[in-house]
Image (cartoon, rainbow, N blue to C red; front, side):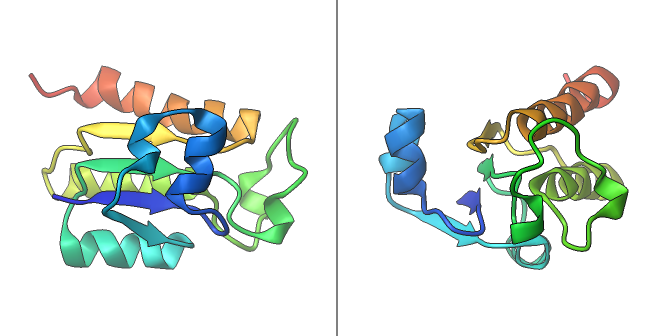
Length: 127
């Protein structure tokens, strides 16, 4: 199993300094920088045990702190990656990662990603 870190700029150690979560100080993270790399890694390596999401993955995403029009964006966000991951797991009868972390500094993006996983848990929770 592997740990997957999605962020366009930062590395896990950077998240450690502002999140204060020791997991980000561990070695062995696989880093992907965008939607395409995220999909490619999961389709080639399987579902990670841990995934950590940034929301803003391109310059056009920065500054969208109040409201996000996902349909208007040219580049995919961490929210799109989370949607893709959930759909991939459903379509391939796989469990989502054991641990889903969100290290984004975008509060609306964080809420939107959290909402996706809460909905998944309510609808598809496997016991």
